[in-house]
Length: 311
Image (cartoon, rainbow, N blue to C red; front, side, top):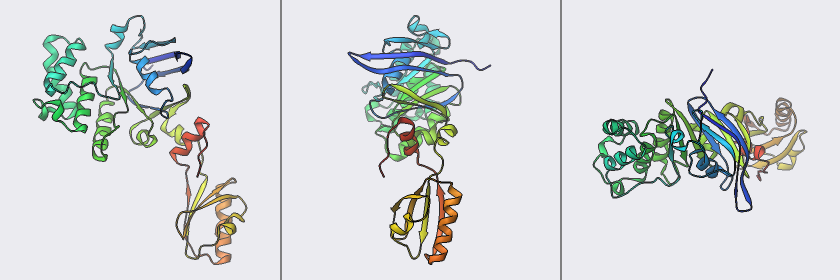
């Protein structure tokens, strides 16, 4: 039986008259990266702040390693590492000074502080910057220091709020790789509004919209929510959109280029593809390529959250 690392029961939170989170329940009982997805204002940060003990919920319970967070916050927080959206860095300190300070705040035994700092630096690839002032590090390395402070006390559960926000493409790739390495030893919750982020980083996904949890499952479950619904075709003698729409089952046509079209359908994919091929041959359209395409991650998100994608 797997150990329950995080358990959230019927979580509610209200700011003044507005509910930010309503009746959210879930468990995390394995290592790896759990993506917490949602648009801006969906309730992600509120949920994460409550789970990390930064904010007291209006109703509901949170347990970390079986410890009720509200009743025994210090004990529960010993198992939590947290990197907020804006890393809490003291820019006039060196990397070593800052991490030693964080270790002390996290109640690491005094005799083990140096070792904890060295291990966190090695894990995050920042050992060569030990004596560098934080303000003189690039954004990517400042983020690595932020992650290092979140794991300095070797927690079982690490929460990262928009950890790649503001980084350049190369830095994003490096930080994503680091997150996956850290998740080999503990449970990581990664908050983001970028759907491609979870696609390359996470094994499991939870999705929040308007304060409600409306999906929880594996990436495979997530990808399987919407079956393939488009055909992408290339033709040498491309017909008009009206001719394509005349083929039974094709409901919508988008011209990608002069010779490339994306066609949406509402019947069996193989049947529609066969009709298209037969029509193309009969009319001499010079078909050179045809592929059945899965709905995009954006479309899946829109479907699950009840939004409508406009093409």
